[in-house]
Image (cartoon, rainbow, N blue to C red; front, side, top):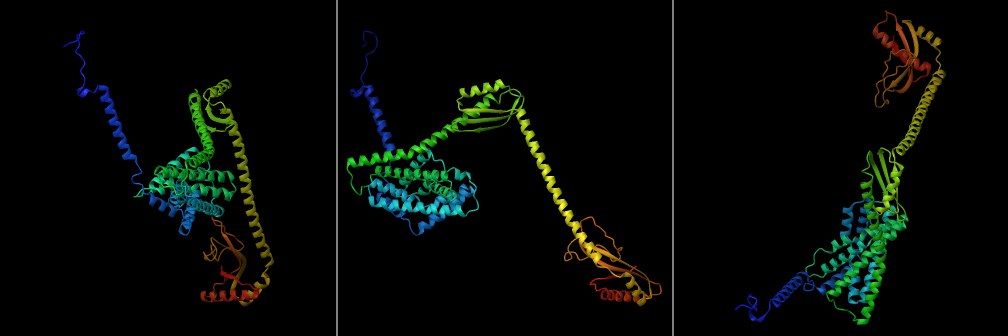
Length: 508
């Protein structure tokens, strides 16, 4: 049967349920399925071990005996890692650090309203911090490595991001501890939240009197500790840990207000620091983009180097150029464009080729002065060495003059005793060596060297001694054996006659 318009009439679905109602029912079924899936996937209550968690945290918060020595050793390791800029050493120190125990205990006691445990946890935490500061300060007082490394500088400017790391780290830590099958979560939380390095950096500040370092690092450590404890309180209440002492709704509301105010006060400085860091990052990005778009594309101009310095009052961009000179009016236009690019509190300085020539001239002048000074110092040293040599030779000449031998008398006495000698000559031989006598005992000059002569080798020799030398010529009738015997007797007699330790007699 058709209607008056010619179209078939609408049919109702079976069971009297309209199509929109079926869609709504299907959607509700889908939502319930998603909710059950999320509950099964994200639920952390079913596997929670409340009694075991309380027992574990109470045991880990105790600070005596082995925990003290483990903390001292970990502080020394972390300080060495910060001093040598070694991230691996710092991570190793954070793995063995026992600092997480008292912090989790503070959060647990606040979440359970356990005043007695809170007092003990705070006391242990304070002692731990004092021991850590004393140890790190002692290390940085005695270490010969005093340079500030990047790992130290990274712990002096805490931001809101550090607070977020502490929040999520604290949540992960208390969830991991509350499981029946505990995983290796606490060491990872200790590394992520970086509790150990700020204490070591604070010790560096105390040892060197660097108070910005000290207060920045202590604030970072306090920020991490507080938000780990607050995260622990949140999870403890979410898991419905029992209250040790019951508090009514009004008292609970007052506690929540106090915690909120305290968190806000703690967060404000880090939020301000983060704001400054973000502003500096944005400024540097704008400055780099401005240089790329407006200066790098100038025809005939090459950018040698660029330097950017950020400051709250007036930042600076310096660009060193080569090639064609940028006109003055174009430089003024670039300064105007900076304000349009969001760089209002920034000054632009273009170092033109003539400026570079001036710098090169100044450097050239300094280089010339340095060269002249170096030559003067070298010449002064050479003159001093030469003067010393002259004094040594003058001393030897004076000794030679003082040591006078009566040659005429000695010659007559020798001729009387040895009639076979035809001719006698006398001289002093200066004996030189390449090395000290104990290293090279062989003389460079032969015994028959000419009297009063000096042979200078290629390498500078080492002067040893001046030896009195008599050169004799025997007549042809003397036998060789007799000449050798008489020569030896003559040398012995001359030593006694002249009262000399060394006298040399050679045949000529």
